Image (cartoon, rainbow over all chains, first blue to last red; front, top):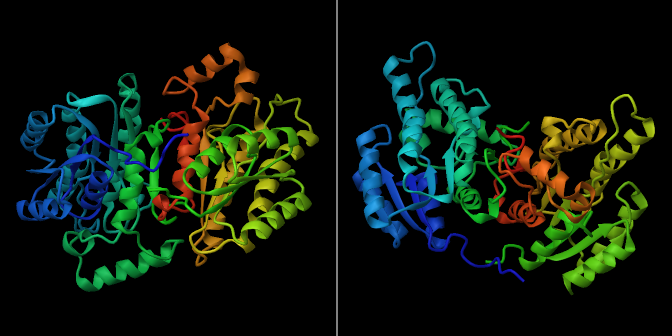
Length: 255
Length: 244
């Protein structure tokens, strides 16, 4: 009889971008609990160090911005030196700020796509030489890859692009038995909404109330609930799954 | 971490193939499982294989009285129910031009009506933390030449989960669809032969058919708290068949 009670990622090397808070941090913790060693990256050194301290063990930090190719080169140089390879890549870094169509600037658009699409593209491309055949790549998209998101249209469009990257890459990497899947969180209780989305406290409260009515489960998700789904996609539990979009959204985008 | 310790599960179509693999997996993760199927000899063999945490009830999902007997047995021994894997399904090819009313009725009776009553009759035993998993199919998304009724019935199954997620709002019961692609069950292997299995494998991006245990692993994920923020969704376990 098989034993399914053991660690699901024992001995695996995982890279997580956007690893200093929210979904990335919760996933790093869960990966380590499942036996992995994680390398987390993020732009803010202080937050990244605090994240590593809260993960406690089997964690390496590299400060960097996924939209800067030289930062990605530095990230993977550290991974190569320390571990020699990657088993799991969780390309999770993303950005989205409020900018209604009428007032959105070119800088806003470029910044959103630089992080969410270009950053994602090169995060994966530059990982390929280190990725082991049979590895797993998980891309963070969003329910907004199918739902319109007034005020956040550049973000929503960039996340639709991410969903499509997973389709093409799943096919491109089949010969190496590397699986590529997309994971689409709905409204999740993370710091990002209040700190980086450019919303006033009032707007944050309104957004949360509105999400709650739109979600069949009647609540926002917790980062740990996303982490559990990412472990499923990262592990051999999903060995016959590639190219999918896994919505973890309490039903928000399913109706 | 045994994710299903102490949980009670019902698996329809549980004597063979995906259902049997899921029963095995759920029991390994700590659950007590009732399998439901039409053939007594297959049920007996399955229970002998599954061990003391399995029970079998003979019946057809298209017969409401049979489902009533199933849930009466669950209630009598376990009182409540945590997981329903509504997995029983039927599908045979019939070319467009040859389709009969009887063929459509038989397919929809099992796959759609059977799924609806499997779930409706389970609800009185279920509560907060419950998980319902419906077996869909990649054919529900892509269609499948020669399988008009089957493909349409599986598209209907995918839709049931969308409606029920709203209907079950506030109950703490989640409902999701698990959609396998080409899966190498004993029945499929016998029906397809070596050549047929190769052909199905070649159609799939991953270049092989699934092992039933791979579908079971995904069913265990949907059954467990690891998918606690998922409802109304479809999890494709299809080697990329309907995805790319």
